[in-house]
Length: 359
Image 1 (cartoon, one colour):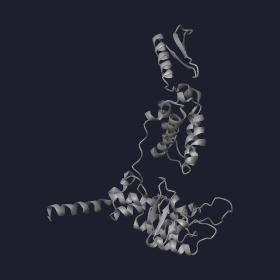
Image 2: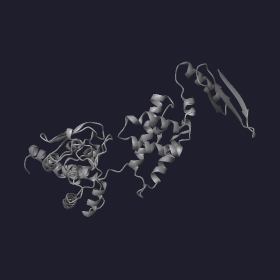
Image 3: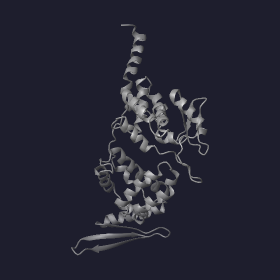
Image 4: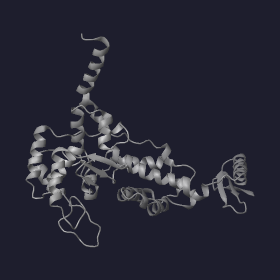
């Protein structure tokens, strides 16, 4: 049953406060400047409730964004172990900024303000936050809203749907020149850590990510067939990485002196019993080798870019590069397309020669 209350402000302005109460359903309320609008709203709400259409406005007013984020972190993120820590930090940022707002008050305009703040902030490295990073922050919050819509019934629609994402850069393509590669490999070979050189060779020869390499265990290595089975990949799909040449020989040598107290290819110096084993930390040896080799603006992940670039320059197609790197689509490997122009030109020339004959 709807109840409309006429109200007058100190300035003489008239408004109409509507309350809809139906047994078994939470009360709904709203305020309008015109009586006709108040009556129409009351009729629509009563009709929606009677027809079984769930009305979520009351839930959106009852819960804050902080509650949504806390519940999401507690119930959803445990099923995403690879991204749990990073997304928790991203969601905590949103919570600090606008967590006190009721979900009904979290508008696209409010999120835009936060998006712009993310873009303007300086990171701990002293640089502005990239568009790609801001997109990840927005994606974390967007999925939390999606769960609140589909599974919890806290809101009718996600406000993120009306917010434009910042443009991401085309993607970094930093790869080692032949001279840089030789200097880096020499520095890694001379490192005090015996694992650094084989790890870097694996990254250059297979294009595997740092986490994929460091997570390798001997039961996933087939030295006879020359392959490594990767279960813990970024996209969640299992794939096989080809091991050949120098990389395969290094692993065969490593297998001869492998530790019996760990299944990891690259275990830490000391194993702590009854605790989950973590691979050796190569950050300091890596930084020292890069500095010793005199290489600037180069990260470990750029070894993966180097492997992809070498594949492109040696005639591999984008589809083949994507398969080697473990990408589901070609979008991520298009950044290497310009490096395979010579191969593409030769394919086109071969086709034209077959059709039209020699010039």
